[in-house]
Image (cartoon, rainbow, N blue to C red; front, side, top):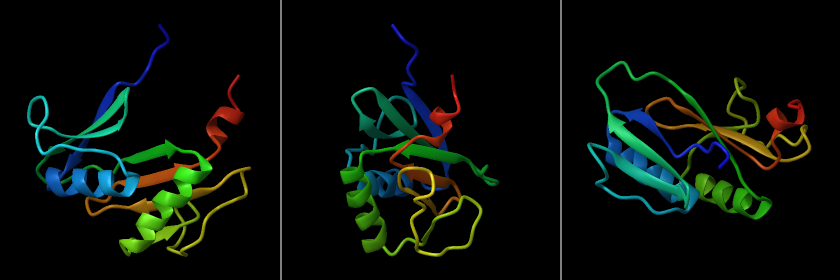
Amino acid sequence: MPIQLDHLMVPARDKLAAARLLAELLGVPWSETGVGPFAPVFVNDGFTIDFDEWPEPIPRIHYCFRVSDAEFSAILARIQAAGIPYRSAVHGPVDGQVDTAHGGRIVYWNEPDGHQWEMLTVSYARATAG
């Protein structure tokens, strides 16, 4: 069996609010309860994000999702409808733009705990591997 990422933990001030927001943006299910103290977001059949409440300071972490063009459009529409500021560059200003310079579409946004989320349609990281 190839190695697969099964789940990861995301620290949050309010695990329920953070899990709900990400699940709503991605259009996937979530639960207020999971194994242990976690609020899980079921990204797909093989991957779960477990939100856990941590005391301050919350470390800021970067997370990236590779999605289809149709999923990208749907998720971006939900980001826009929620009024969440987004940008086209990882460390750039909030410009409400989508980066298309890497052969696909890329967008970044931050959530209330400061984590940086990225969504892309073509993996630029995979282009250099191998």
